[in-house]
Length: 125
Image 1 (cartoon, one colour):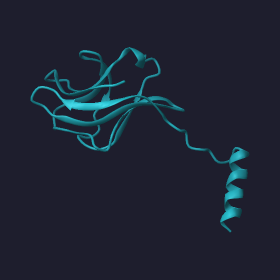
Image 2 (cartoon, helix red, strand yellow; image 1 turned 60 degrees about the vertical axis):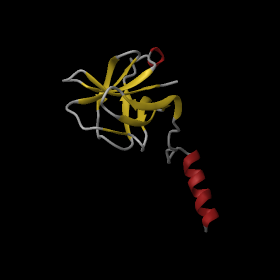
Image 3 (cartoon, one colour; image 1 turned 90 degrees about the vertical axis):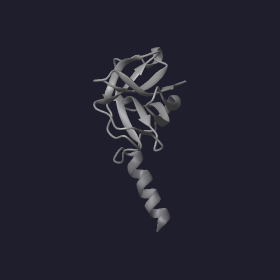
Image 4 (tube, helix red, strand yellow; image 1 turned 180 degrees about the vertical axis):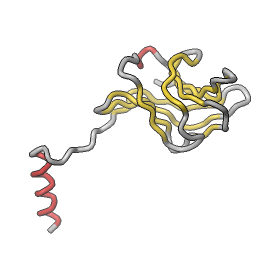
């Protein structure tokens, strides 16, 4: 029965009736660390999939609460706002605009806009 099911799934996939999941490819990766008195930890990567690029914070991501925390790309400082931080912990994903040249950025930042404070940053390679 299992072989019949696999054959049917294969036939439907080849005929275009079942979409295969888009595989994501890691383009850059790194580790976030706290800056100044704030603390942030966890893995970060930029992936490319069928929809473009995205920043992915790992399941080990965590930071402190703060007003208006955002994910930014940058080099020595936050430069390109990507999106509002969804949660202070856990895995999350942020789509990067197709107009953004990810090659020109070397860091991901967790940035508090009202206080102009970097909560954490990680070099991505």
